[in-house]
Amino acid sequence: MNIRIDTQAGFCFGVVSAIKALEQELKKDGTLYCLGDIVHNNMEVERLKAMGLKTIDNETFSKMNDCKVMIRAHGEPPSTYQIAKQNNIEIVDATCPMVLKLQKDVRMGYEKMQAIGGQVIIFGKKGHAEVVGLVGQTQNKAIVISNEEDLDKIDFSKPLHIYSQTTKNREDYENIIEKIKARHLTKEVFVTDSICKKVSLRAKSIGDFAKSVDCVLFVSGKNSSNGMYLFELCKQQNKNTFFISDVEDIDIEQVLKYDNIGISGATSTPMWLMEKVEDYVYKKFENQ
Ligand code: SF4
Image: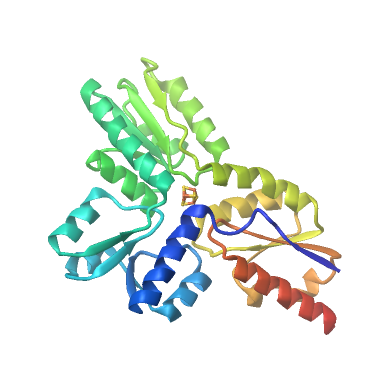
């Protein structure tokens, strides 16, 4: 039996640097608050919790004073920074540089649209932390669309500037842009390519990886949108793809039928978890 971990799987650089910054703070102070889950993976959150991480929500954050709080890679809207200033909260800002750049672009796009009576459109998941951070750059005026049905929220007689959440699927983004352009009356549609390269490259490579093995154990948290998306891509190329969050989810009898087993995961899946899956399957194979 041969087991292979997908070399392209694992954390993206935004998450790697956020976790590195968090670990440094925890080593120094023993504890640190983080606004929302540092990563959409419960196993990794639990590991960091044991080191002193305390995850808080926005309501708790707004009532805190004189403390230190980390902002994760997804970023936050300007209102979060205002609350921090008012409440003397020191921010450890781990917003991914690509998200920061996108926030700035959306802010500028909003100013431009304001000047010509246009609208800012964000293609993303409503309520997702990154989307909330982006909408916040537009005084909460941007229109969030997730699918074709949401297009009715748009006034097609006005100019538009469209952005995407960094982790969206490129094909879906291109399809929705085409549909918007087809319905737009004046054709004044500006589009920014804001999908993270790491995500689009992963989408390309995961299919090749899935085809190169007999079965895939796809490791991800159920709350990761990127995980769900990559799992579907994997499954399209290899029907023997199994979604697992930890070793307990593995149907070992089923998996041991295959000679070449692949392990892959989302941009929020830690490498140590994929290695744990690898060890588990090897041990089960040796002891059968
Ligand atoms: S997916 Fe891309 S944009 Fe999002 S945190 Fe990771 S590196 Fe940054």
